[in-house]
Amino acid sequence: GLYCQNPLFRDLLRVHGMKPIAALGSEASYRGVFRPGDTLWEETEVVAVRASRSQQGRGIVTLRDRGFNQSGDLITDGTRSILYERRA
Image (cartoon, rainbow, N blue to C red; front, side):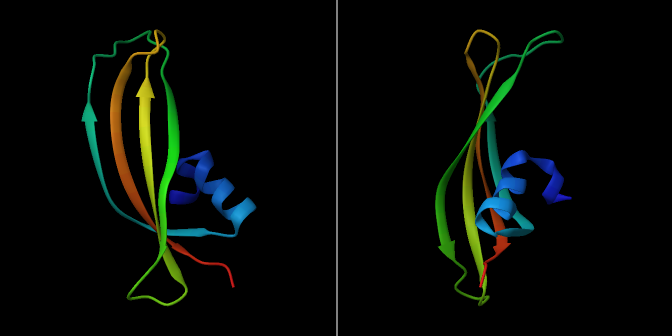
């Protein structure tokens, strides 16, 4: 599930007490080519956090993911939003 999908989710729960509940949507674009044998790495940035307007005790976090190849070239860029349970 979402908990084991990304180390960021584990950190949101362990460090900040934010339990991911559901993926709300994502957008991604491919900016370059990657091939078998390439070394890929990703950066994830928290770009927004807000309380849910419709569900008390829950919030929405928006993340930006950027993927790079071994030369440092940007090959993917996208955002995703996650519904999470807020700590008391």
